[in-house]
Length: 145
Ligand SMILES: Cc1cc2nc3c(=O)[nH]c(=O)nc-3n(C[C@H](O)[C@H](O)[C@H](O)COP(=O)(O)O)c2cc1C
Image (cartoon, rainbow, N blue to C red):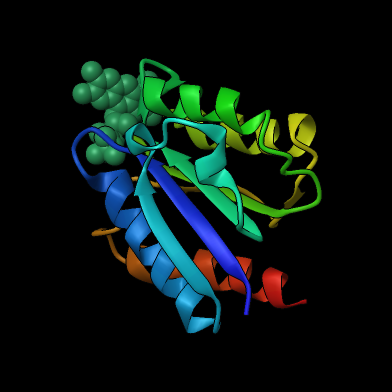
């Protein structure tokens, strides 16, 4: 069984909810998932021992939250090359953060990314639960392949 780490940066809980649903989807696909707030990851060793990483942040003023930025600098030293990756985030109108995270994981860390980043205005909107769980299932399926 593969093990995924889902890390989120969220101010009002929307991105956290998406993270929970992605973790559920990964488990539905028969893989393990651990869920952590980005601000709780303080050293690169906390990123060791996983086969997949799914990082997410809400977008504020066109940017990801500072705790996700810090996490990405830390992840640079964690040897994630070739690991399965995905990214997500809640947004209001422009949603830059998930795509920035995705491109960093792909181009800087050299990870094997799932199809695209997941951007949702809210998991509470119609179809949101299924989309977020579906993203988790995709991560789980890529882990199993
Ligand atoms: C001060 C402020 C700035 C924001 N800036 C952006 C932005 O630049 N682009 C965008 O798409 N959404 C923006 N939003 C909307 C948030 O991304 C949206 O409310 C999101 O659901 C918050 O997710 P969170 O609950 O995980 O923090 C902004 C919201 C606030 C309050």
